[in-house]
Length: 369
Image (cartoon, rainbow, N blue to C red):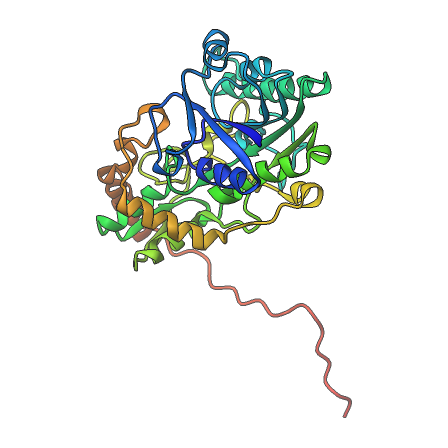
């Protein structure tokens, strides 16, 4: 029987990855810390350990080998070194935040990496290390250690996500909040991917080893939605609607806790990029569609509804630990103070100019008499 090692596998896309491997006839082993266990994976072999350091990886995996490996978690460059010559295909899950701010959309695989910040640590340094890891995995593949493929996830939504951003909306609906502060009319575009669709990118790479070897693929749903559409879809699942109030970043800078989700991806924008400027990152999945036959396996809005139902039944932990949502992200007092201030600005705006009605610019001659 064919064998597969999944490293991590207990967050958003793990269940779908395992289901896809099983459907393809693989005997699956899960290697993770054991801090999150899912009933759907109970019947698999689990290796509990620490996939972050060479000594613990060597201890946990020994000299075992697997036909394919999908690494969704851990220190992937060390995992790739440990599995060199011991797996036929190594699929490394990376992330689209590693891509820098680019002019225009969509964002393709050849977009430049995010530049490293000047600080010795922090997000800029982390993104630089992720970029190095991508290149190290591909270099191992070129050296013959295994067939190597990198799949970059954007924000992945679905049950078991570590930081479910949908809860921003769900909690405010439950609390009967009616007004929602947006910036740029809520039209910013950021890549998202349903967890079964994210898994499909990795699985399709395995299906097409020759084509995918040495390649990077950006993962994203084929149909994307602006932030305001995303919020509306979640609220509609709960029979609710919001009044959207557009407050510019000059009043509330991106990332301000009083503006829910408006700074959702602003932490990616570093260096000389203006912090008050909303930038799109619309992830292009055409390379995967063209080369490895990727197609969405679930409809984004239908899966979003399923995701909402899951979180209503199993509310996430809100403690700000390990990247999870924080209580500071639900600062209603700050939201209300900002709304009250903005309402005052709007009431006090001067009456200037007049309504312009512009006719179309084309001639409309009359018939000759």
